Length: 275
Image 1 (cartoon, rainbow, N blue to C red):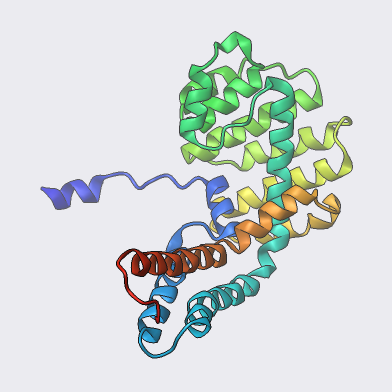
Image 2: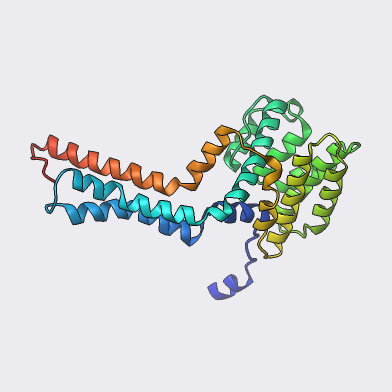
């Protein structure tokens, strides 16, 4: 009975937009798990190996440096994806700035935040396209799709926005997206209000999503658009650095916490701190 149910259950839908993000930033998968384990296990192993053998600064050196150094080396080996991360980060920042300007609120970053945003206002209080985008983020795809058809589309900019939202809806549903991407390309190319950089990046993103949906690697398509955006804002650059070296930061912070916890524990128990 269980075997039959498992065999007939539908395969989970893979959203190519989400898959592209995860591939570019290394979110999820065994690689992230291994690095997280190394970030925690490294300082613990160093502490256990050094305990009772060496003292003071040597212990701190062993706990704080080897694991972060190894993880920094791993992060640097993945720098071929950094141009892709720059483009995706730039796109996300542009969307967040536009959201703030249109809604006077911060753009939701998760389905729970999107649900909270929707529940905190009525549909007429927000721009129609922002409401649709929030529905998509909240996973309410059918509701979003019904409202997309009512969005204004008399200008290339409005049509581009409508096509992008339809592309997002089809990606979330696991539907074919090639036709949607082509329509979005045509609308983006015809939009005279968009800057050349915006147009180039959007065209590259559409192509990358389609390639990812087909099982190909869409990262090179995004990387080719990196020169168009020029220098990134300093805040975005800092955010990307934190993301790239997140496991280094985790390991350093855990190592510091481990050392402080042991020192405090020995001090409160009346022990002598020799490591």
